[in-house]
Length: 72
Image 1 (cartoon, helix red, strand yellow):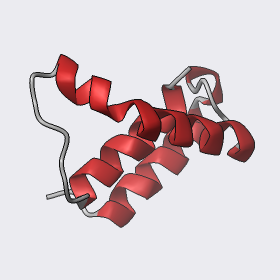
Image 2 (cartoon, rainbow, N blue to C red):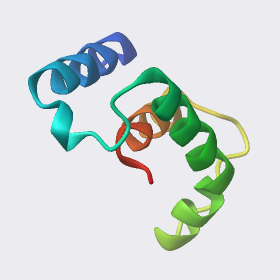
Image 3 (cartoon, rainbow, N blue to C red):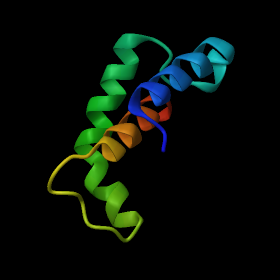
Image 4 (cartoon, rainbow, N blue to C red):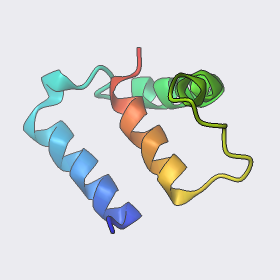
């Protein structure tokens, strides 16, 4: 199991190694994308054929963080 802190470390390492692969490499853009993806996540779950969780989980939080790096 990947612990949430490990995921955050991996995201930071990815950004440091290859910032060009990130659509949102600074905090302002990252937080803007995080908010936008969170507002639109019902569509992400619908496209996957899954219901939107009623109760947030660490797994969902991980998806949110991963998406915020690349969400346009």
